Image 1 (tube, rainbow, N blue to C red):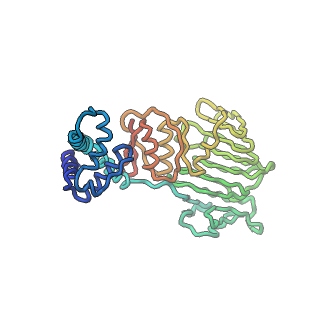
Image 2: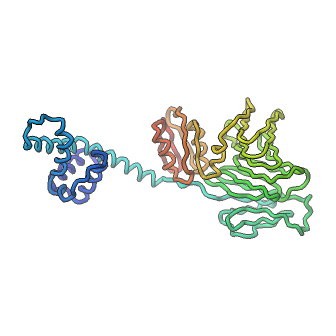
Image 3: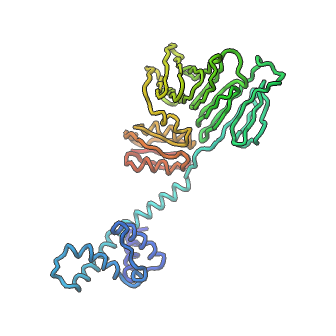
Length: 382
């Protein structure tokens, strides 16, 4: 809508010549922008003239005028003021609201839904099963174990007690989570549970044997390991090995993150760096951070580390690049930076089951960053 069109509409409104659609549009603007929504004019009066507007404006404008003026002069001043105010600000707000509606409509066209519970299971023989599409019940028999999908969608490995397959002949499976997905929960042969985040994978045996339980992780996962002192549980990533007897912890080991972060909620953890065999121990409430130059342990807010598992985004003084890496994985979008990268840090929490535009809007309201959605690409600017 052009400025002159908005002015013409306001003029018709004041003269009582506006169409019902125009009156409705202007009424909405008037209610939203005048006197903090406390003024509710009579629609019938507004259809005929600007008398109700005049009375309202007299209350606010008249108090600042010379009280010696006559009522007739007041009416003229207020009526003129009402028209001037509408003509001066009406076009601005109409144009602004129109632009906002256009932007909302554009974002809705390209709006991107949150991730889903999905994964691809790869069996020892190379066969793949898309778990989101698979039926409940028995999926396959692997080595000494049967693989079932439970009624609530969990992937459950159960060792077959009467299996003719020797435990020594262990098969390996892997579960891969694409971008825009997660999987909750995988129940391993020993009963340990694993929640796996987007763009991650876990490789594991279909039955645990010998003197250890070992799995391999890429990306991020939360573990609840069944206690077994005789058979330590080890999680191997590209840069470290985490050893536990039985505990709850989260490992963030994405290749595009500057450090591997291991956060302990319960029990005790031993971490060994692959490069130099340096060892660190964790107690509940601590986080180990391993990068190319340091291996540190610090107290941390564990809620942030497992927010993803609980359906939340949680940020605490985080930069926009870290945040956009998380959004990129969960919404399966590409991220591009235009001009100078925003330097503000952000904090707060929001459900990660909102559409991406809702999450981006929460960040954009801070005033430190701007987003533009183009298909499945998000453009970030200062």
